[in-house]
Image 1: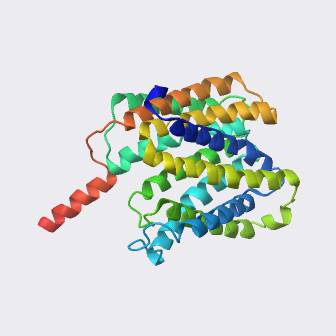
Image 2: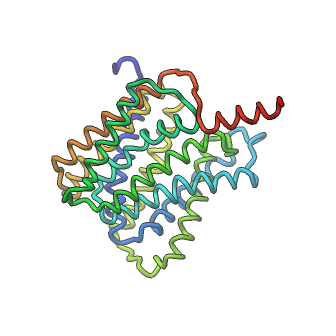
Image 3: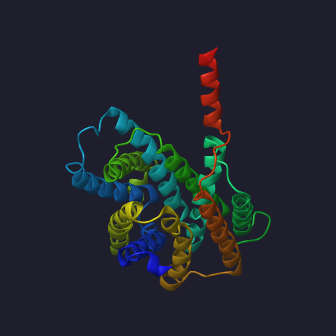
Length: 316
């Protein structure tokens, strides 16, 4: 398999695996001293501002404006991905170990495929539905709602909710009037999400709870440089150089990387429950990613029904 792709593709893929898998560990360090929304606001305002400073003067600027429509769409996009998803993740990681958080966030492809089916009517093969059942069984086993598990269920539920909003924002971006240049769109969404995070941080009184420490500053710098710059740059390059089926493997490799690093760096315990639930989620995601890569016929989704109804109304 390795011979099919060049060394640069494997290097970029390795960067995405390690960069995004390790951010859960860095975030666990950051939220020890910095409040979650304040930390995420600083991350996205700095990263987004630098991305815009680099990307705005470059590329095909003609016909790709950054006006009121683009900024409005970026606030929705950034609100879903960075306020609701990253903000929820940071808040949840105050009580949830990095490895468990990564397994919960690993459910994003499950939510994306499910929303794609419900909203856009994308028909899926039977293996995808097996993946749904296996993934939700893994999440339920990890939550242990009726047992005596040690995981904070509220924090875990908030993180899963953030995974759902990430999937929602990703699907929203398909038809949103965002800038066509990917780095400009990412930078604008990051800045808008950072502004929303800052407003929530100020409104909730986080500024008085911040303790600036060397660990927090280094962890935040790691999130910006490694998570936002190195990981995202490698990801954008891969989107143009590698097949989507190969790129999508990050969705089930990142949780494994995070669990191992959480154990090695933070001394987090790896329990049998985590291994069983994690295996179920990883296999589920693998089934869904593989099924989603196949060209399949569209079925009837919520938006498709609206489009059909509108067309029928026009004909009448």
